[in-house]
Image (spheres, rainbow, N blue to C red):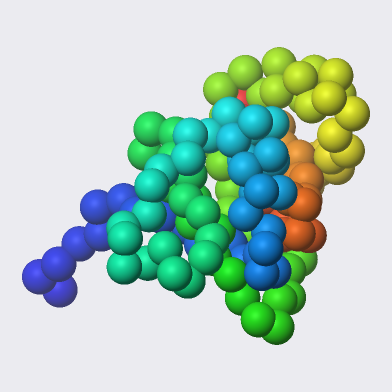
Amino acid sequence: MKFRYEQLDHIQLAAPRGGEDQARAFYERLLGFQEVEKPENLKKRGGVWFSDGVIHIHIGIEEPFQPAKKAHPAFRVKNIEEMKKYLKSKEVAYQVDHDLPGANRFYLHDPFGNRLEFLEWQ
C-alpha cells in the first residue's frame, strides 16, 4: 500500500438531543477536556466537541439514541491512580478491570451510558 495511518483524528460518541450541557459537565468540568468550537456549518446538527492535546472527542446527536455499551474509546492516562482518587472524591463510579496483562485500567460511563476505558501501561 502507498498510504499509511498517522494517528487517530477523533472519536465520536453519541448523545440524545439536548445532551450538550450534560456533555459539557462531564467531559469539560469533570474530565478536564476543553470545548472546541464546531465549524459554523456543523453547529445546526447539535452536539459538542472537546479536545486535550491530541485527543479529540466529538459528541454527536443521534436519534433514536443508543449508547455504546461495548464499543468504546480507550484513553491512555499518566498517573492513573491519581485519576482514580480524583474520581472517588467526585463520587464518580467506575469499574476496575484486571484482565489485560500489564495494564492498570478501569471503565466508566458518560452521562449517556457510553462506555469509556482509561488505562496506564505498567
